[in-house]
Image (tube, rainbow, N blue to C red; front, side, top):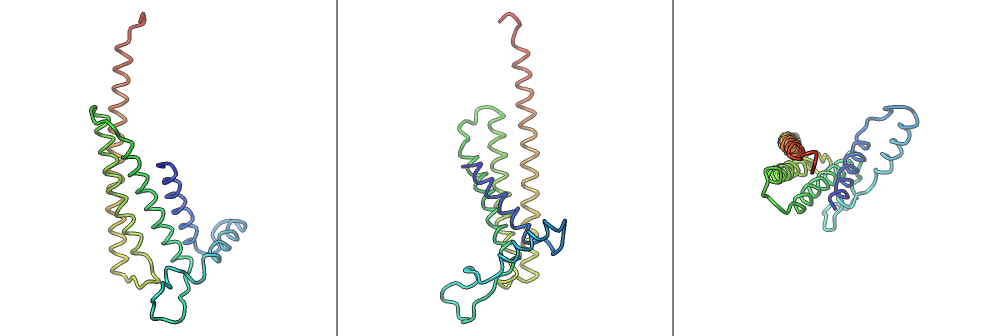
Length: 175
């Protein structure tokens, strides 16, 4: 489950980023493929034309809208990956296990602002500059938390490495 959600997260960000690329970037074959992908993401969107809308003419979604939706999907995928990783923790006896729990908690805390921040960039639903600023600050907070989690993960790895070296030093050659 954790790996699948990681793939969903990475796929959301990969395809969302392709939809944000400017026209004509890169070699011709790549630019043509990206242009075709962007063109396929243009048209009416269910998210912009929900039942009960007072407007009679359907709204068209562009690549930027669809890309932002994919960023939300990617952020959610990574958040669920962190959550499923937390479900795999079963013991908190050693320092390494407690640090693993801290890493997972900090990463989950960083994933939530990414989900919230992605919605701040949806231009076709009336998000103005204030909403973009809120989204950007959510990304900043999310990045800081993910980086803090990575620092704690490095500390956990150092603790595990030292424990492994200690265990190797305790073994005698004739045992």
